[in-house]
Image 1 (cartoon, rainbow, N blue to C red):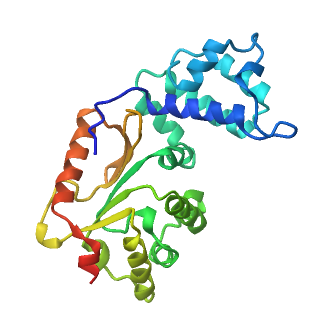
Image 2: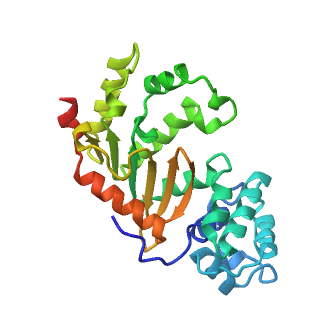
Length: 280
């Protein structure tokens, strides 16, 4: 796990680059391989500018230039609005605070980054980490929740979570998931056996390192926090999403706060035991 010291490009700038490459190369009618760079009219964008946009090294690009390219690509309106917000975040001095506005768009930005991450680290104190929740566990959450979050946030419904889990499993990307013992000793309801059977399947995945922090550890720095840490190849800065009773948000991994949470995660991991051992 890195500490985010190899920063090359901000996450929104990198994500913008990936989205612009996708829009140019996506299959379309009569052009199954998309556009070649040489086919982009020079009056819209020079080859040098296009290279800088698609490599994630052009923080000073204009929104007008991006919109011209998207118009040429025939991008749908919904994606144009999302990409416009990425441009705003990529150009901001404090990208992290602006980027959080994009992430709040029904989780679109966070999900894009999670799907692109090469390594995933999760911590959850009182519930199973969302990435490995099964349908029976989600039903238990709904049945014991008086506020129906799913009615106002589509990211909270079962189909969204199951599809997200399916994509992760298909990708076989390494993930470490720390769970406090409280999440497994709380009443799991009438489908407890089904929930635990599903969890054992997750634990058995060769790329999933699921670990439990026992009660005997006592208090530790991450207690009460839900944490998602995403790491990327190529020196791109890690992303931290943190939730606590005080609120939630995205934290720059290289910041003082970010380093605190990363160090706290490492210390908690050392105190944990393999879930296989706990569930035996």
